[in-house]
Amino acid sequence: MSADTPSAGRFDGRVHILPVRIYYEDTDFSGIVYHANYLRYFERGRSDFLRVAGVHHRELAQAAAPIAFAIRRMEIGFERAARIDDALAVHTAYDSVEGPRMMVSQTILRGEDTIARVAVEACIISLDGKPKRPPKEIVEKLRPYFRR
Image 1: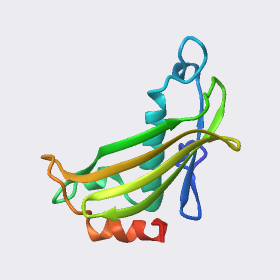
Image 2: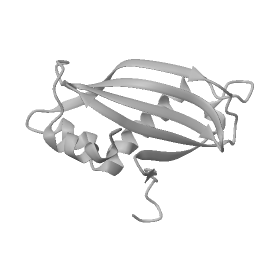
Image 3: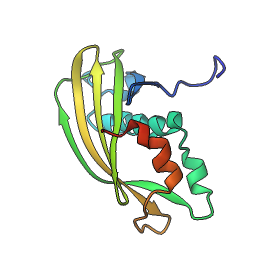
């Protein structure tokens, strides 16, 4: 990776860690992160987890039987506010695959402080929106990271 390539984070055991800096554009008029932006940070964490694990969205979309990910359910808890210039870390763990569903747990931290948590149920779908089981190749790439 060259010095100009954006970081996609790293793994610590089964957890992917993605650093995120808070910029002015992320905040509301008070300098606190606007609540909907946490969804963006969580999405980046899930996407970069897959990227580092060798699963690439572009390849999935261009496959003979294209598939995509869709969010079926999210349960979010906000514990503290993040503010402009904060350095955060998005921790992402793909916990399991159950049929077309993938269970993901994520936490955003500022140092040791938890900012937000989310439990995600994502689904694999065909491009016409029908649920699909993930291809074996994806499951095999993710299996080392599942909760045992």
